[in-house]
Length: 540
Image (tube, rainbow, N blue to C red):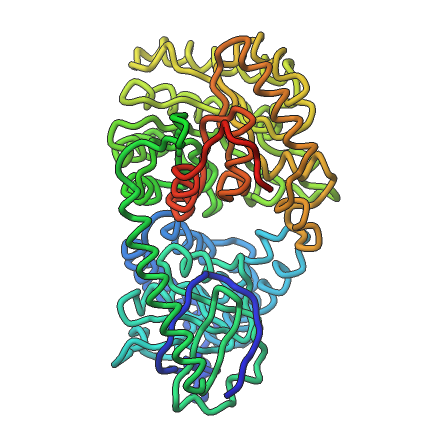
């Protein structure tokens, strides 16, 4: 029995046979033709690769679709294509030219300061690998698993997971990889346990007796003995029973033992997320992250955004949806829009980015105002730090209204606009922001903790600030609640704290009556609140 420790990319526990995935190496029998002919072969291969990626996009769900849209966009990237063309012009064949350019381009991306951009290197390699396989005449048929298996490899591409599908894929174990890679994101979306960064040593070990993949704890156990197998089986059965019990809590309102109603909303990125959240019993969408619609690197048009918001409203089935305007910047980069910065979290992000690109901002506002005429939709503005920020945002809202009136388009004249409370200044000035016309407040605990404690949310060394009681943040939330009480404006908590049953109870004791978290956390939070008496003394 051998145990290997890595990092959790997607939680879960599975046990079963192991299947090794070998990614193809360089072609061995390549005949190089004239540069003109090689370029023509390349162009045809790219067209076919994009067609295949479109099929994968259709097979994916939610924001996973954007991953394959991003790969299609990358194949049209001028910089990458110039790199490939230069190698072909110098006499290289199309396939080795793509391989060389892809490695060079991915290396540049991996050297970027921004974490999101670094993780896109694997998507460049995945897209280019597809083109190379077409040029080399290799089949792109998905790996066929005869029995449900744990897939092990040096690394996993997004297309590997989507091509195989959930039915036969028990879990994924990688020697390399990142928790934030697109492959990891897809695994989490599909509910497939995954562990990365296990090191290459396990790939040479005997796997005849199968493995236990304990992704909850970031471990892979090869050739498990009988005791480990029995313990894993016990935990798998227990998790299944717990899941069924929690599912039964989905129906009905969330009321504490003392009769307090606590609204549990969902934080989502697209219509598929919204649909899953409604199935889990969410009372609505407390935070729809609109910026995920542009992660493929292209700002969607007003019409595209309008239909995106309509699809989310439809998925919510008449329940309220709160859309956050584009929160671009910091860890969410968009090529051609965001810029390198020594302190991206403290720079051009959220509302600041929107104000710097007024046409983009007003197009989004027009789409939101139009969608608001079709269902219960309201809008939250991110990174508001003072009343002046709010007033500047409302200036553009009024301009969008005038544009729609001039065009004769139906929209919601009475749409509610609120602001995200993510900075200490916004919490301290909440009363002034509300007095300026803000209708509701959404407290984003991830950023509020980050800015209150000067603790980078992307740096794991400071994770204790995000899991502890955070007394300073609770005091700031208390100030927000006090300011809101004077106007009757509702307050909702979102972020990591909203997914922690212990933290939710603490905020509920302060007076918070609305929380927004990922669908996967809703039932655990609800189970805890149903057993809680908010009037009783706190026990820990």
